[in-house]
Length: 311
Image (cartoon, rainbow, N blue to C red):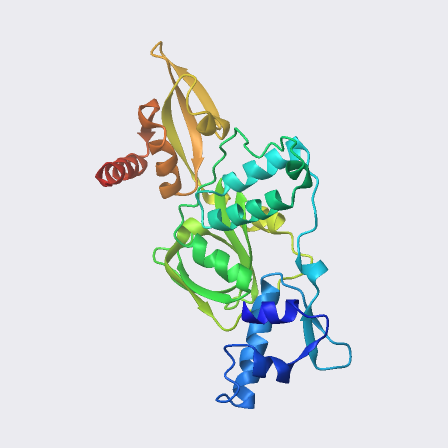
């Protein structure tokens, strides 16, 4: 923050020597030239990773942040546009991005000239959309993608009996049909790979410095997931669903058949992840009964017991 303030509140370029002497944290009297150079390069890279535009003096040793490039310009949003932004921010409310989304929304709201003029901007959107990211690996992988740092983790593929160590340069995270995937370069295999987050086992550790990962400029993450995910190896589950309930499960069903006159339908749904499907079924309460497989039934019982035991 001290570096941002120093480079923002000036019309002139600040040299590295001036920054070393005047900006708190660089300890001009104690650190050597090499130590300062490493710290300064690291800080500049981190600020640029955050989207803060640090300009370099053409042909010189100077730096500054142009206020017009850094500040959010005045906005004029319609009620529908502001409502859409509010819904988008609330969509991520239950994830690691909740705080970031809320902060961004406040900044946009403050810059909205329409709202400042007294016209009802539509920020109090009635829709309460939510996106959940139950996978423990999501937060660490999201941070690694933003920092462009390589990661290591254990991964259990569809055909794997035990997890295998993977070293990956992460390019991005994609949600496809309610499932989260990581797309990146598998260093051990020397090729692009797609990893389902629910199959990441244990902690995710970062490797190397920020900015070391280069994302291919022409990469299409959605297409990579469609081509590289192992959903084709999924099994099927047979569920007995109360009529008119569990619309989300009905949407992915491959077949639906009415069962007698009791008001239930038997539906077959693809099941790629036992854990994911157990959570989806458990969320429906008594409206969905697992007929087959037995492992899914046991997993649903486990999820419900864990929910009851929570304070």
